[in-house]
Image 1 (tube, helix red, strand yellow):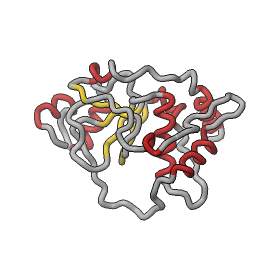
Image 2 (cartoon, one colour):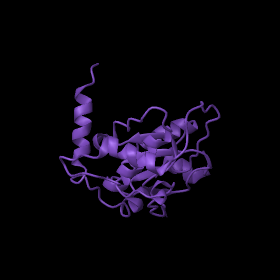
Image 3 (cartoon, helix red, strand yellow):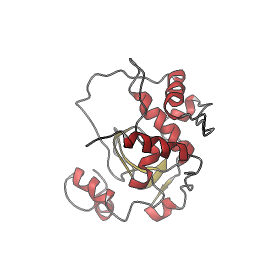
Image 4 (tube, rainbow, N blue to C red):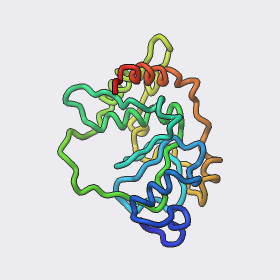
Length: 195
């Protein structure tokens, strides 16, 4: 955590993690935000900014957006685990552009990364999106022409603002009607879960 008094005004007091949780449950989170992320590396963002994608070590979804963002993409055997996140970038760009925000004044580090398959291959990303999100019956084919630029970090950056209200004015409204097949996908997945 960094930022002194400006940070404390937004994130409150406590440990750095406590401040993240303070923020998530605060009125500082803009209404149009779908996802709150803690960026991996760096010192964080000094203010409020929206993106369609960011490398995050922690992500929280707003409850009403969960049916469009979960479940994460299922990957083919031996695939890079980065493909599920790259596929989610496609969904955010299609359905709720620029609606991911970083917790202001907080950056994360994880010195205990486990070994796993990494890397981004455009053909594999497109295949993962097709396998998980394309719906012939609904004529829903997000990111069919996905490019390398669309999976780069910081896509659809809104700019940095001093308040959540100001950021909210720069986040386009979501296109949840277009993305209705994702909600149906979620409901089918949810119905199979037994607790």
